[in-house]
Length: 243
Image (cartoon, rainbow, N blue to C red):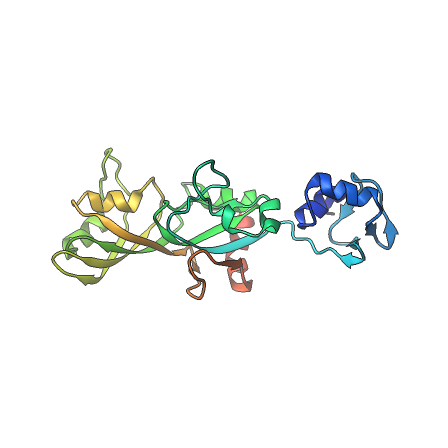
């Protein structure tokens, strides 16, 4: 039985802040199973009870999983005094549900980022032991060759002396001063891909995450746009929740 306080239920459903919904309850605007409820701490069974606000049924999702095409210039955080965050891109409904980015992308990196309020999902995907594959597309200011591919496969040593896990590098286009490449890594060290190319004296000038495990970036989403995970994506997410 999934029980939750009535005021939290309403707040998480986007009806208002906890203090606002307490006033709504006080003034008998909230009904449970056809009866006015005036106690904010009333426990609700989210699978059985029908809650209405101003005679409209309130739908409730305990956990949400949001697929975002992260734009450049936005940081992967829930709040910041100076910078715009990925949570700032969301509707108030999701902000009230306390969603957070699952993992992070650098400020100038774009592409797939999942946001959720499910701590289990975050824990089971962010553990360093999981070695979840993450795919990226990048522009490099220099020529990338088969030798670089080999170094990625062997496990590249980056600045600080850390040896990366074996990674896959493939070349889409390569010229003397510019290359387009695809990368698959199974870890997520700070600025890892940028540091990997810096080990060759190269600079990443554009970086986009294209997949996280088997969830791929929805190319119909413009940068800054998002949607809830679809049925196929939920099947992938659920395998992490159940671990």
